[in-house]
Length: 452
Image (tube, rainbow, N blue to C red):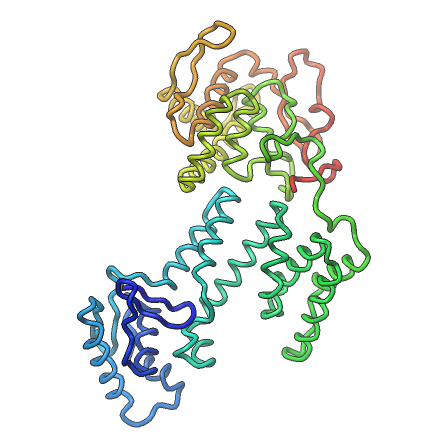
């Protein structure tokens, strides 16, 4: 059985509607139980919701009658309405409930590591939203009481999606989809602000300013309030065409490879380069300083440094599209390894907490269990990750190189750039260098902007 609560209330069995013949209040009662599927709803609460605090005499008997009619109509279809103490419970077993699926999908999206994967998951979640919950069986007061958490979750998801899309440079999509929602909810100033930025970056500053004025007027008339300081500041910046509001320029110290921005190679060793894919170890993490926003960047970076061949990278990207959960897990593991490796390499001469080294060693050992010995183009034999190692293949490749570095005296020549907010690693075999090449750190303070 499929319960569709996000929008007009529909119950389908094998794609066939099954609510024909039921009264509106009976359908409303079923919808409330479906929203709370798996949890008993006290009869008193059901009465309060159905009659909005103005229950007639005999309301309890009426609810009992409604339950009997629902059992008769839906019991043969596998819907179980159980009596629990002084209330009723709809068993969720085997049923599809779009409100529950929506909550789960938003939770999954917020937990994803890969920005591209988060966008896909938020899209899937928001596709389930067909309109106000219980649009045809509940009046506005009831929808506000029982549908408010779902409506708030939908707005939060839309805000997070807009933020991700703007960070990925997809302002035109935000400008096409978000302003209508922002106009409906002027009290959500983050929605309004992101809509204004997207409109401005899409070459529509007049529309951005118009959205602000409409929001201001609605706030004044409906809430007797003024826009917040941040929104007012954004309005002034758009009016004077602040260049910092335009789409960010490409990173200063980066190269575009297969559609993603990667940092320049500066350290002389792949293991150090992997640490340097996070720009700004030495200070507060600013937007744009993370060079591995998604699994795609990880796989392409490994190919760019010749840790993997192009054919393998293409295969990994295809698999990541087909199995995004695996790719997200691999990216999370790569980021954890990167932090441990950085901590291991920045310990003074290897002395200090052995925890970082232990975590690096664990991944390196795992990589060697998936390694094969092959002849390279230069005729020398080398250990390589097996090409069938799955999404963790880029991690295994860099873990092997990290193990090589940690076993080499070059490890003792690793230096940390002391630049403010930098902290990039490099090799100093001559003992004369102090700073990383050209002050590369990916920080706004150094005149470097993050990826668009």
